[in-house]
Image 1 (cartoon, rainbow, N blue to C red):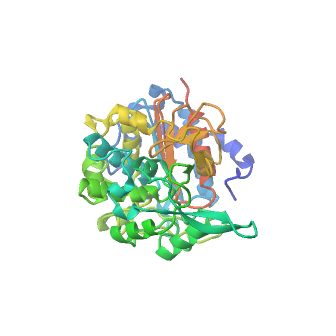
Image 2: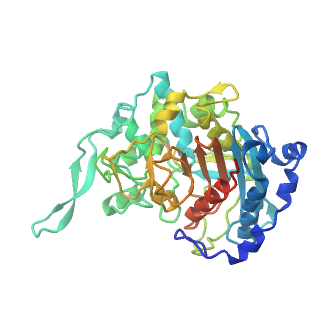
Image 3: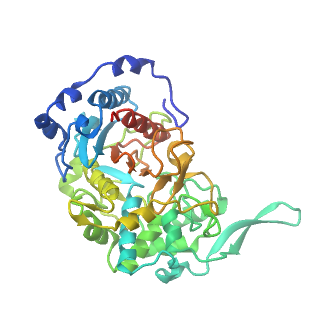
Length: 453
């Protein structure tokens, strides 16, 4: 079974990589490229033959063989991969099953639960409010959510015997909007925190469900805000990078600052302008048959896979509640690559995108686990405002460029933007479990290996 530590050898794959599949033939002429690349549903980027944008058709064929092998071995249910370079769609393929149990093939317009890839969307929504002058990064969270006044931190102090004893101490400063965007507010996820006091408090409040990871959609906005503000922080605000429910709290701030439900504001300011017509916080009844399904059990652990179902939630989870297609998310990624606009529609200024994709941790904020190690099992990355950001070309054990930015989702989705290479890539699958980091590294290797200019 594949794991975060790297998986097994590739002897069975080597002979397959010497063969070039039907996708290369399909992309051989502009007319066929148009037909092969344009996904149904949503608005596609203009297509291009790979060679027109500095990619190798032959090397891109390796992606097809690798994905088909993973599906055939039962390690993935299916996947959609889309690659844009120089603003044009050079690769768009689907593999495997939308629902393996039903024998339903996966189409390029399949709808995926994107989980934490909702975070960049909500972060961009917040930045539109910053540009409007309705929000400042230095604003305290309590300015919009009064429940966040007078917070406590779950720390430890030595007892009479000199042993560490749990204690609640006052927060030394109030968390800010910037803290929410960069995960330095002192919040946590019950699923991954090692602070037993915080984990227990989140479980009691329904913010952490041991049998259903990363799901707070059963709480109303008011319930969510009240309960998370009442739980202790895991760290002093502004001192530690800890991946957390911070962007869910950011969603509540967006609602207060905009006067709209998060999904409505996001649709108005980001999704509709970018023609992302298949993205939202629920899936309409007539489209539920397009939702991609995970395998019943994780192949690596045997644990059951349980994912949110597409129904209208009680609250729009800015951190993990989104649904969408690969084509939609590629439009979002391309808009960021193009400095905040796409096809004449501007959602952010170039300067805001640059600010979001800069290093916001520096040397003053220490990570519990670094962003790159959390996402892909490699060092070399810092965090900006909503995105993980590569610090240098080296260090990380995956190809990429200084300044690339990226994030991923619990159920197996992944995207990255590389401004130096003028590249945007989206991979969508529904495969939660410990193999996620392996597939993120794998697709990066395959894509960069296809650059031929």
